[in-house]
Amino acid sequence: MTDETTITDESLLSQATDGATPPASGDAPNPEGSAPPAEGSRHEFVLDKYRAEGRTEDQALAEQAKGYGELQTKFGSFTGSPEAYEVNLSDDIVEKGIEINSEDPLLVRAMEFAKASNMSQEGFNQMVNLHVENQLAEQQALTENKDSEFKGLGSNAQSRIDSVNSFISANFDAETVSAIQGMANSAESITAIEALIAKGRTAPIDGEGAEGDAIGVTADDIKAMQFETDDNGNRRIHTDKAFAAEFRKKQALLYGSDPFRQQIG
Image 1 (tube, one colour):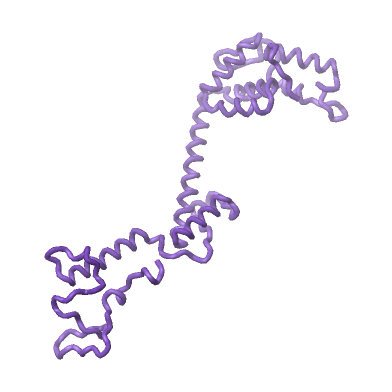
Image 2 (cartoon, one colour):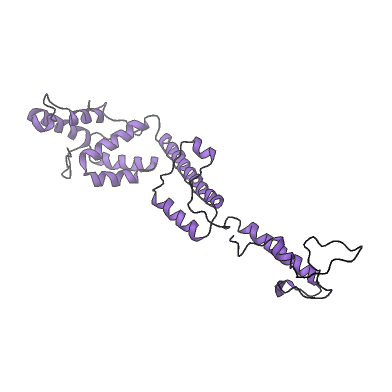
């Protein structure tokens, strides 16, 4: 809080009076040097809402002081902003190798919000660390889900994924490939894509997604031919007509030769 809103013992309980009469002998000393209010008098700085029926003026004063303490606890992070905020990540986050770019637009906006909210450096630290911890938890959940779906594809999961990627890369433009890959986020979606591929092929995929052995051509063979280069570093499917014809023949054998086929590369 700023000086104008900070409540201290002095501002609440010490109402110094010039020429205050010293306490009579035997009375408890007044450490602030002020005369105690006369019995039944009202403390002018006590808010009326604290003057409940049956409550003395001193009790009302105590309740008001208690209320200020509760507010300070509730809004402890909004006690005054520093000139500039620092990014102080917790040791646990640092140990995971996490760093934050000081020019990250989200961080800049967070600093602007904190400044406008009169947030302390400690409060800003808590906000930033909470955000990073949340992001790490989300990433971990995504990774665990991906691993689970991968296992759901069986022992030849990677081969099935490679085959689908080879097919869509050879038949669709980059934008379509990206869209299909975005949908392939589960074992069920991979299986569905395999079923669509099988509709345009002369040799269907078996129940485990295995392919190539029955026809003597695999997706890896097609991929190797697609990117094979000649002595000059040029791809042979563009410079060698016989090689290109063989490539198309094997590609059609593995993937089919529907009219919609579009060769990329």
